[in-house]
Length: 489
Image 1 (cartoon, rainbow, N blue to C red):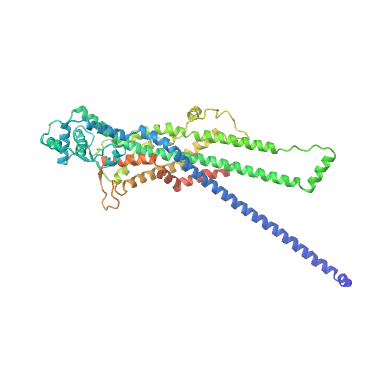
Image 2 (cartoon, rainbow, N blue to C red):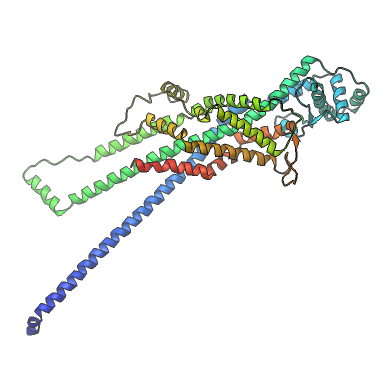
């Protein structure tokens, strides 16, 4: 046996070398495959975390906008109280004399001058008043007596006074109301017309701007938080690698030698890292609260400036358009588009979204309840690598970008389409599916417009907000803002 091994020693050495080499190669390949597998798993986990954070940011946007909607809605409805004008018209009707009643009944009997506005039924019902089935025609002095008569006709029918109506028909006066009363009613109907369209477009623009501003703010903050998490993970990996090297045999021998010869050791910095991390979180929370409070400007100041521009555009477009004018759905769409084009021609609506100077920022923060510190006193540091100036600068740059303008235009257009679709719903103004487009008088369109704006401002959850956030353009813009983290990591 020994002689056999001696005679085949060279061959056995070669075989052992080959076997050992194969074993080492196998171990190397296995280690490399494990590394690749771990890397793929880490990338998949990182993508999942990124996706979850992004989706969570989108959900936070919806909840935040819903929380702010009640404040915005109450202000808009209070400033543009169309229903109060309707109540004033009703009170004027209640104080009218029998002469106005006789004129109204005569006008209703002829059927040539009275303007049917059956949509006012739901409008008045919401305010707890009696329903109306007819209203006056265009707000001109020649037809104002017909308008007042129309109101009284409805209420005389409601109060069931046929004898008074018959007497009125029998005795028709030549002058049904004085000129002062006519001008007052004409002014009220003009206010109803202007306020309704102004409130509708203010609702569309305010909700669109609030949604996009909140989306931009929360996406930026979520991105910064994600970057901080990535850096924290990198720091933990470095600390783990340092700990692993400390537990190595060579490092243990080095530590033993230092201890043997009284060589000073490096101090531990774990407490310092914990302190820095806690300070960074506190600074980020303060910065986030200041940044989000800036939406106070749009909620309490910006929308009012925007509504002034909208009212001017509405008055220009509706000038010369009578309440008796019969309009189709496409005509209403054309009127709204014309108003929107005039609003944008005066300047971008984004100017109403954020304060534009440092003094305005301080004032807005004080009004928003953030008056316990100076947001500009703390400069950028390791604890807070991002300042309020940085956030405002990036937000202003995004809001003035071509991408944001496209998204805002598409949101406003979608909201207008949603409004027109609501007018085509079952039992509403325009009948869907007609071969020939139906036409209704402008006065009949005002009640559903006012109802739509009230519902959009007060309904929770808001279909308008959900629809805006679900749009592809909106999600693409949010992803574009979110993806900017690659420039900062």
